[in-house]
Length: 290
Image (cartoon, rainbow, N blue to C red; front, side, top):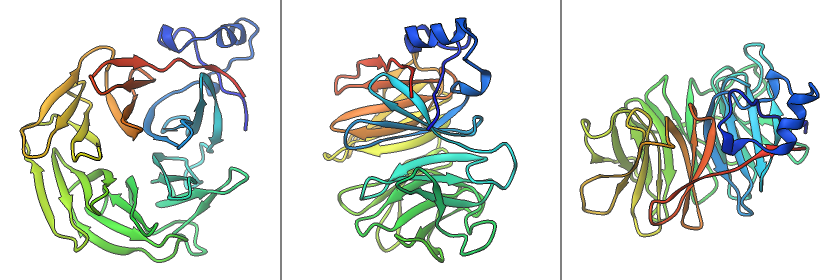
């Protein structure tokens, strides 16, 4: 793992720490060591945050207020995580990442190296554009493929993918405690049953550009809407409510739910925000670290 750094002129004040400022002053901070375009977020059981950065390309790790690189991909096309788009955690807590450059999903091993799950000895995998990853009760991966307009299932240890459901323009996924898969489909929100039956929860015309969805234990869904600069709340049986809107949110794109708290990553603000049960938004502070 290498050190991360935050650029002063391009970073919000609340993401700057003394270590970052010192790094800029002594010249050790480079453009390559700054969050560039974060798209997805995953939070583990201990509160460690992982961010998929499309333009880095690679994955950041934020523990407490210490930000560092977890994995840096190559700028060379068709190399692992050259076009990383999503991150998630499996049932054992291992990090997963979806990459459209190699059309595959990866699981990071104990040494922090990404291992392809669907390539089967080939230089690329079996998924066109993996936009979201969820893990079902048995540990199999459910992956949204924007290229083929479907959700596919990947065996827990990898291998040949199987079709799960046809869903137009699928992006963010969430697998709930009732064994349902929630899917952002175009500008709508749908639920897919274990049998692959799709039910629409929110029709087109409500969201502007939804990206991800998470669902609480009570069945309440939350949706990140980038164009609306908002997080929507959808209570069971009720109409969608624009719950949190506007600054400091600029383009919320990724979201995770941990212990009743929402964690949101914003690609334009280049920041992570925490949202409590009352809708209070708190920027997550970070300083460069190892």
